[in-house]
Length: 299
Image (tube, rainbow, N blue to C red):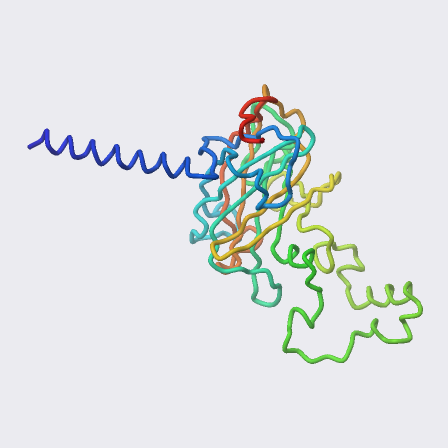
């Protein structure tokens, strides 16, 4: 009887193992890896649905609530994010994909926005900084993407008419007809009614990029990067969730012989997540393959 149970358990285990193997090697998907593997490629696509992403090794980064500092997230939402990476030796593209049943890309009172971020130590060292946004003397570089910024880049105007379609207005003062003959004066007038923009706050209003580059040395120290590199991002939403590509400079000193670390964060707007309230990962080893390795994945 015990032997029969043992055989049954063994058979079930083999079936489950086989199913997991099939899932990890299904058509169009790359193998699941224990680290984020950057594959060499002449092309680093910004398009999340580019055919080049098929077959690239993927890492399933497990996420936990940010409950170390206020404001904390007390309930879990997004369980994991799938990550793939490609590099041409100068730039690196990270493709993040996660489940999200509700699209949240419209700002406003009591509204929260979907987003994601990647975090990398500013310097490769034996002792990595704290995964919760680094620590004093050990900074981290963060590239942050937001769904509302993506909507603006895609063409949605940043005005009351688009954000509140049921509102009735005649016009903004800076849209007055006499000002049309003087673009400089019109631009100056527009700033008077957009104080954040007048102060140089680039986080609101019209944008030409869906991402921003930040730096931090611990919670509460987040600030714009003093040396932005022109990072880019593009996100696409379908009925299952988001696929986002973040394109940035290859981390300094990262090479096939010199590993680094990477961490991820996801914000689910429908779950009321904003700022420090987010799902995050710990550090994940970041490995760069040498030229020619796994070349079959980047035909």
